[in-house]
Length: 421
Image 1: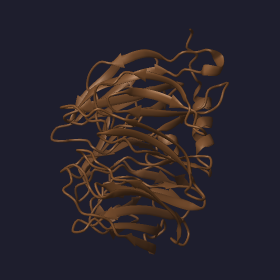
Image 2 (image 1 turned 120 degrees about the vertical axis):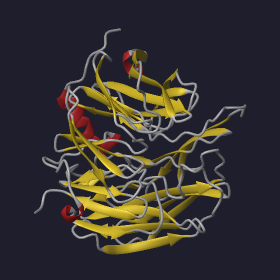
Image 3 (image 1 turned 60 degrees about the horizontal axis):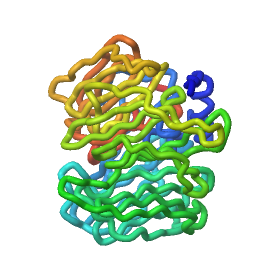
Image 4 (image 1 turned 180 degrees about the horizontal axis):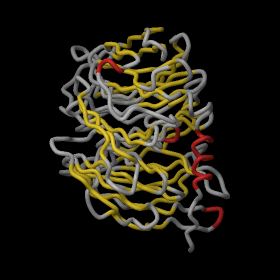
C-alpha cells in the first residue's frame, strides 16, 4: 500500500493538537508537545557564559528528570540521595523564585550508577502536575494542584523491580494520564483519570525473565493522528517493538515485533512516520522508520527503512524540516534524510557522551553531555557546529523550551537562558 507523506503543515497541526495551551508558553511533558523536542523560540544564543543566564538557582541533590513549563511556572523534581525523598518544586519563570515545594517520603535503595531517585519527568496540564517515582518497595503516581501544590490524588502502582530501576515519564491524552510501567518480570501499561486518579484501564502481561533479558522500558509514548480514523497511542517497548493502542480503552490496534533489546529513547513522529529505537550495553542496536497502520482504512503497519549506523540508545532522536538527527550515546551525531533513510553526514564529538536528548530552538539543536557541556549545532543538511561550552556541573537531563526561554537542569541546578529582555 502506498505511503502518503505528511506535509509540514500537518506536522505543525499535530503538535498544536497535543499541547492544550499555546506551545510557545508550555513544555508539558518530557521533550515538550507530543515528545517532539521542538521549541517555538525564534532566537536562542548559540553560546553563552555564566554572566548570560537570566537566572540560576540551586536544587536539592539530585535528579536526572527534565524541567516542564506551563505559562509563568517551571517545575522540576529531585530525589534526595540519603533517603530517596521526592522533592517537587514550582518556580517562577521570570526569576527562578521558589513558589512552592512539596516533599514525599520514599525509599532509598541500591540504584544503578546511571540512574537517580528522580529520573521520571512530570507531565502538566492547566490544572495539575503529575509526578511518578518508584522502587522495589513501591511505585507511585501523584497529582498536585499546579498553582498551590496541594494534593489532588495518589495512586499506588506496586513494587517496581528492574535492573536499571524506575525512570519512565508519564504523558497525557485528553482526560487520561498514561503511565508505561514495564519491569523486568512484567509489562504494564495503564491509564488513570487525570482528575480523580481512578484506574480507567490496565494492560498487564507477565514476562519470563531469562538471562540477559531486560523488559523494563524507559521510553515515553507519543500520539499519532491519522488523516482519517481515531488518534493512536504509539508505544516503544523493550524486547518487543512498536505497538499502537486506542488510548481511551487500551485496545491494541497493531504491533510490530521489531526489537530484541531495551527501549529507552522514546518513539517520535517524523513526517507521518514513526521513528523508534532500541539498544543495550551503552549503544544503539536498531533505529527504524515505520509507516503506522490505520485499522479503519485497512492499512497495515510497515517498516520503511532501518538507519544503518551511529544509532542512539538513550537519547531520543529529533526531527526538523525533514531531517532526522541522531545523537548516539558514545558521542557521534548523524543526520538522515527522513524520506529515504539516507545518511547525509555524521561527526564524532570528542570526549562526549550523550544521555540527555536534543531539542530544537531558534534554528539550532541543543544537547547536553553527561560531562556537563552544551553542544550546539545548526539544524541543517551539512554539519555546522556552533558552540561547545561548560555548564558547570554534570547532567543527564534534557532542556525545556517555552516562551522564548530555554531551561537547563544539571544534577543540582536549574538555569534559564534566552535573549535578554
